[in-house]
Image (cartoon, rainbow, N blue to C red):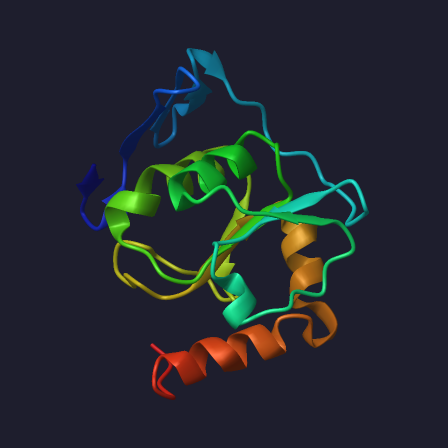
Length: 164
């Protein structure tokens, strides 16, 4: 639900896993009725996971010391990051109905939501712009030392040389 160009309410259901996610701006994020805790810092390491879309290899590789996984759902990627099951996710192409709930879940649990250049983003007002979500220190790591520069350049090239 969007009011005054702001995400205020979201729900996401994974029926095969019997997982129901719910979030309301200012009131918290929940999975199966249990409140999700605030995100703790995580150090980029071999044990940490970044979730990427299935065709990310077209813009990658990603300079990440840990594991990279693909689940095939931006909504699931965002929910898993919000609950602390992964360090970050990058979402290059999307529609608001795919990411709205997950972005609000992430915001309510203290994750950083930004463009791949590290700038603040409103997924309501900047629909379709590539973005990433993760623990703040993980996002800082990904932004440091040009780790995403090749990815950003390829995304711009795929969009016909235009940044949005």
